[in-house]
Image (tube, rainbow, N blue to C red; front, side):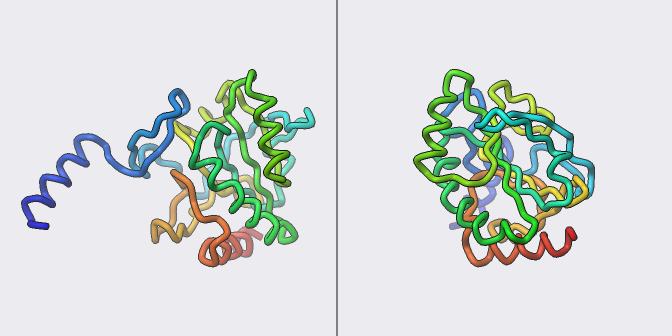
Length: 196
């Protein structure tokens, strides 16, 4: 590709905001968005929240302090979200004994609660699933689309995760990830060790 063509494509990308394929909350159609729309400083405090799990038990971020936590915002109608769930389950099963927890916060509507429960049962998801039909918790995190994930240390602070997909550390992981790949498992193990 010529230098001029690369420049034109770069200008189009800048003006249109082309980045990663990303699914917005309001519309289950893919849109394009960059990785760094909103900045969150590493080691800044994660906003506390309380939500109900699928057994109607209240789970708060404070109740998870002392563990390294992967928080994932998702929905059953989001294809990339659904695609990454088996890999997240594999990651969880490999590392749950290492003081690691996954909390997947569904933004499915209230009326879709039965779909959410069926999905979790059918896919044998064993990590914590919370339901946030209003999207209030996602707003606290500055989430504009899904899937979007964050790592939290044992003291309730954001972690700059060494993302093998990006080849760089980031607090906000936009789009789906191969969570059970060897590179990701090694990165998560490193984060758990550093967080203790």
